Length: 170
Image (cartoon, rainbow, N blue to C red; front, side):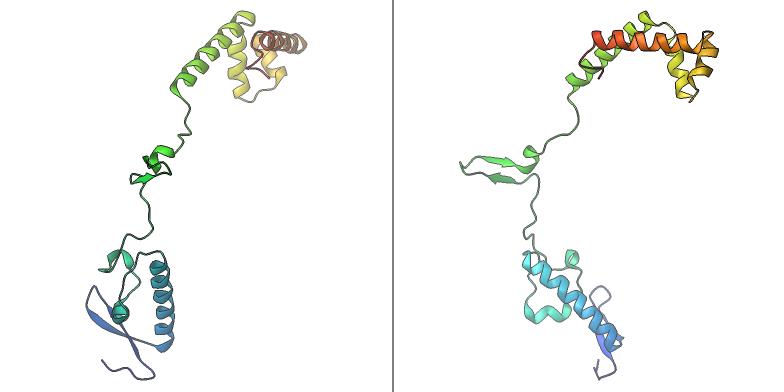
């Protein structure tokens, strides 16, 4: 395939064919693949010999000259200063709570709801009505008491629970 000033060619490794493109298209492609190749070479992931650069299409994952480079695996053992080996996966912190903490929190929450039910039996119904975004006046009317009595009972229940569960209710 001849290259003149108005036509350039790019080799496609998959189809093993040459494609004619404009000089502008070729220049844009060449900048991209050179930038990609250099970045991969800097990280040790590309070992293309200079004599094969014309073959480079920037698709390093499919290239025969691909290398592992500086990519680390979480399962690959790494030695520390003392010579002890550990994996990077061993050093990761699991953000999920411990099952013991979840069980303890659930037990405390059950105690809290049980005590709230003793102090104010209508508390569960009030909670359901609050989830429906009803006002205090509407909730008091549904329960069958005055709004001021309703607010007073809520405040007293909250005060008692705050005293009994000081670490949980702040």
